[in-house]
Length: 164
Image 1 (cartoon, rainbow, N blue to C red):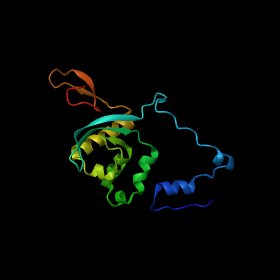
Image 2: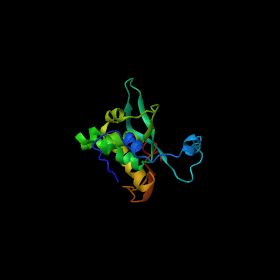
Image 3: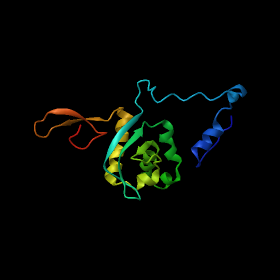
């Protein structure tokens, strides 16, 4: 068995090189239709959010509403081979968030440059949101009222304060 050592590079190239060869009859068959958006099979894979401050683009438009999808193993592995992350490990969250944020206002191509230009409070919110969605599977948090000591749940994903 031959081993291949990889130090840096594109994860897609590595996966293509190491992928098993397809049979001729599989190659000739038309690709299967992707499952429709309506078929969720009971698993919620995308979560909407509202940023505390909002991302301001070059035109001055503020983008606050967005969506984040569940992370895959590939999403967690890809930043590990990113040279920016190797040079500065703190950059890992920027790369990771840029991969799982599917939409931010009218922006559908969210990349690391956009996450870099977000306010620190929004990045901290997204890091916590990512952790909640991917480890707990929901966006609710248990809180206690400081006045009456009553406990209740709030949904961290949407609405302004007091709108839950």
